[in-house]
Length: 390
Ligand code: 3PG
Image (cartoon, rainbow, N blue to C red; front, side, top):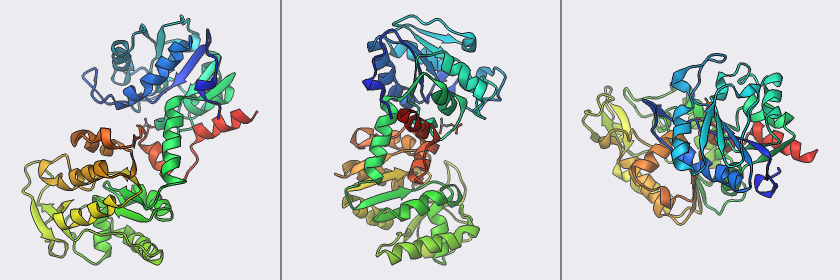
């Protein structure tokens, strides 16, 4: 791909697609990780003397209508404080927009445009016409072939990759394509079904796969244990068994929790009980791993050369069920391994246990991170590669 850092942007109209899809409450951004990650790109464009336009989606509003709840105003307000350059939010940018050198124009939510989701050609061409150079920097949205990610890159005079996008791709490639071994992947979260392809693809690459959370419950059930009222996908038990057999055939295993922390209700007040995995009662729900399992998992992490982390191993939003995820976060932080983490819940855990500084790379991607782990080509990256060739 062509890299933004290699281009002369002086006096050029530069349209940057970022993933500024951040949580907003009462008009205020509540988690700014994606904004912080995008700012260096915007600053670099300013430093290069560009006329800077920034666009993103926010939430999943209905197309073709303005929806105040999904407005980019809180993001523009945040950027106005964070950048030294003046920041202006523009809603009717498709008609054309004047941008001065040294200012930053933020476009209103691209998902307000009809045709965005379906990657409409006419819309993509309108976006492309607004700039001399299009910069794709939204790694978190690179798995979406939409007008503001893929279509605009197809039609822009010049289409290049921004520094955040290339940093993400470089870090993920380093972890998966040429890792220092042993390569350990932790896949947690609630459902096997949403991460089955990730599990499958990773199980073919990693030296050790660790499953956690609701996903682990299906593996516990696959070993013939009773999981009570826990989140568990019975129809995926054969898949879990197959993955375990596959790991065994490769000389490894997928460790299944031997002790668990259970509760009788999904609530912050639920009483936590430590149990052997064979002793889970019919009315129990598994919410975390116990100390024996924690010891086993942290020992694996200690020896890792590379760690890929997606998803918590327990319901860490409730204090009494957070020990497993905390121990894991700290073990990754203390490990010498090259570590990479991604996904919304994972980032929340990293924040909660304050280990961000000790993780080698934290991805801004949720779905995009997972698709990369699945070995899929991200369409918005593929088009940049195509454009670089002709
Ligand atoms: C994300 O939060 O994963 C990205 O911003 C993509 O959002 P989407 O799933 O609504 O396309």
